Length: 134
Image (tube, rainbow, N blue to C red; front, side):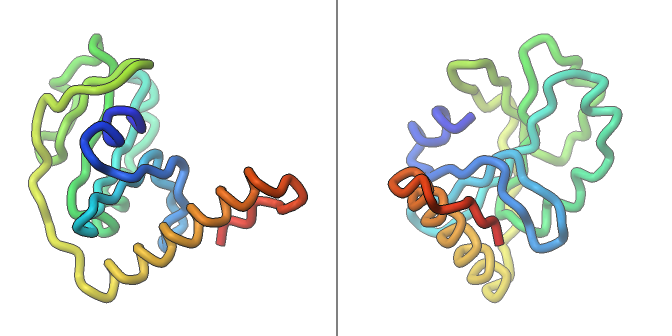
């Protein structure tokens, strides 16, 4: 997923804690400040065990599911976008309908994204720093 979105001009973070206590599998931002969130489902069992996906939508402009090629599409809701992914990339099967974030929420999410990205970079350059996901 990260490769595919990087190639499309997005900056990507994985496993991003959200203000509502959920954790986004993939959160990406483009150069214009639009957020794209992806919920990755590796199997039917994974999808059926997780009904919390609507709780992610208030924290992005575009919401997608990402599933493997053999995933039965009929199980997925029609509203989110759909990505078919493997270990090397992803293709868009269905575009997500956009919903603009409120300006205050966008600013808060942008600050969260920047802080987490900087903290992760700091951990890479200074192994003494513990990853503090705030």
